[in-house]
Image (cartoon, rainbow over all chains, first blue to last red; front, top):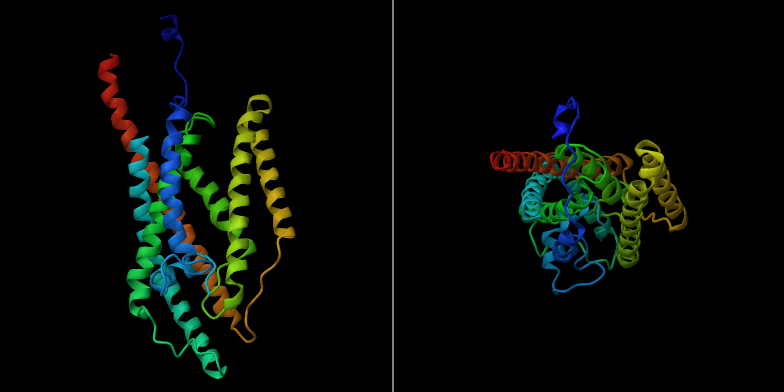
Length: 72
Length: 247
């Protein structure tokens, strides 16, 4: 209660930290899903191909070039 | 955590759409010009039947729906990862607002994920790059990307540990210098890739690379600012809800 008398001049309150153990399971799940998504945009049918025929590669072709991933 | 993830995905989707619009307006003319060169080169080379093949996906679909899908998917994936990175750093590097954390994290992530790999292995338009070396070029690109992300993560951790003894400014400077030193060493050690064909217009190459980098800047900038704004609103409403209970 005595702290209430101290003049308040804090610029911003310290934000609440999210505990690491709460983040980790989400990080694993979202990390995996994101990497799989990024694989299709960035590397499918370049170095390896999960689908034959190159449809995924051709469909996403321009995005791959303009997002600076190696292509051709 | 769920709050952050949902907002990361929303911000990522918006950023991906914004990047797709930028790429369509500024990037597509250069891609078309490069494809014209590629087809002209292929036509003169006997035995190279790349140009004669009927395209599996039409150019109109590639440059509109395909471009949008690629950017939106990238935005979603990066948005999800961004919200995770935000959860790790938020509140651990000083008393800054959620918007400030988001903006700074976007700058750092753009540098580590997009800019630094780009400086060593820049984007190439169609017609540049030999088909036979795609495997080694893809490997090199992702090796450098992985090193860059790991080095940046370690630098952030080192800054957090050192800040307690040396203060934030000195620790931040040491972390930045350390990251730059590691990446400079990698850039020096990793092999160079130069497969620009003879006679490819330098102006077209420059314009294409600038717009490719611009697309990435738009993606990260919109992601960082949108995510910051969304989280700021969410945290604000949470605090308003919490206040009557505390009082």
